[in-house]
Image (cartoon, rainbow, N blue to C red; front, side, top):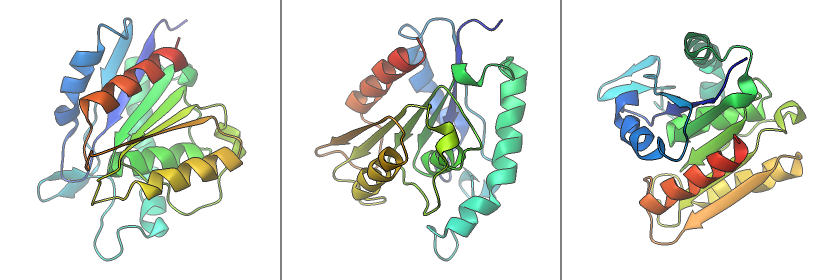
Length: 197
């Protein structure tokens, strides 16, 4: 029987998993017995890695759907490596920007039934929402001043997921741009403590 939990960080476009590991360091004390993983997205980007190409229309749902197989393969590998293949309810996805988009897609499509999902500055691609993952609690954190993905995207996602029976919390932060603020990180930590306890 697996003890503890696994937090998988999903980075934004042109970044790498290592860039999110400082957040793991700041969360370790608050999430004892938790393992942290931050894989690099499978697609090359000139500045690093990406989950799907944004050439043309970056919000085309077909792009996200085309990325599902590679996403699932990579996450399945991480989950097995960390010993959580039989304990998906002990796993949390924490995605930022493009990483949040693929995380929301993974849960909303019903492919991943995990213990918690935190989306920073993300959006939910237009798609039918599967009720099969509705036991996954979701926290959407978004900066009101985000000029890359408007905060309205998270407000809309919260309404769509809520209508499909998901338990959703929405935190729109005044004056925050397309980033993870220290307040947002603390909000996410307390959400994970509650969801994975």
